[in-house]
Amino acid sequence: MNDILTLHCLPFPAGLLYAPAYNLWLREEPDGSVTLGLSAYGCALYGQIFAFTPRRAGLHIDAGRSFGVVEFAKAASSARSPLAGELVEGNVRVQEQPALINRDCYGEGWLVRIRPDDWPAARSSFVSGAAALAAFAEQMRLDNFDPQAPGVQALQWKT
Image (cartoon, rainbow, N blue to C red; front, top):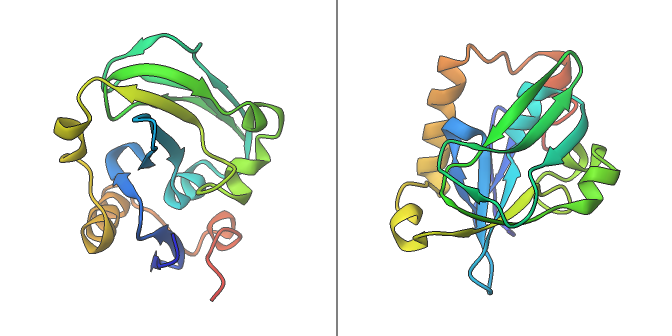
């Protein structure tokens, strides 16, 4: 994750895959599982996150279905999975210290690990690099995202 791409000063590590419609990043692990986390854009949309409660390990999660609940300032939202598979684990550290999500969304602030039903087929639906930036730019347009909002400024990548 050495190369960092930015969009409205929000960081997007080049070595990750992204599901912009879900505001998530994905990373394939050596054991065949896939780690999912909230992207910097997702953090900007939610603002300060106060809690993350994953569903229990061992459950099968269908694509588009909830793998947990994210609680933020004035609401809670279901975190939906962009791929089908078995929920291997939720990040215990994030459950104990939800501020890790905002502080280090691409590192210690990851959310869950899923063992995909068919990773080679699912992988092709995710984007990386310049394609990820273009997809997030379109998602931001659809969301009427304001990159100048005070909460967003706190998340911006410092070069």
